Length: 149
Image (cartoon, rainbow, N blue to C red; front, side):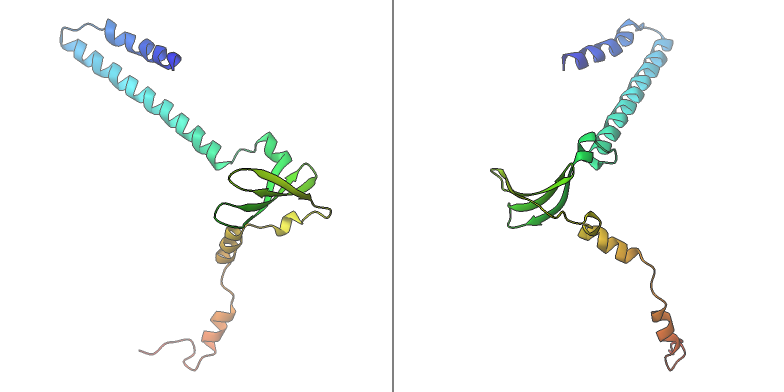
């Protein structure tokens, strides 16, 4: 925090050194204030984007390549059963608010390709184009696919 205050004091020194009298002083102060506001906006935008990138997990972390949660099953409001991949092993963990316990090590690992999250599966199903059977069914109708009004 001390470094941040020192940085702000360094940025404010041109404001203190600017002449106070005259019409040109007001325009100079306005330019400095505009520059300071622009700098703070750019720095804030950079910090915001860095935070969003960290939260969205678009950048792979080195630890994530060795450690991944493959599946989660909710057993209650605050209890979960997890299948975690650590290196080449898969472990079953029980998780409560108080602790995390190793339940067992899987002898036959789960197939990771079949572990598609439910939301991703639903989204993929919605994104698929409609089949032509619905179009053919309306064409075979007594009105020939045309609706009478």
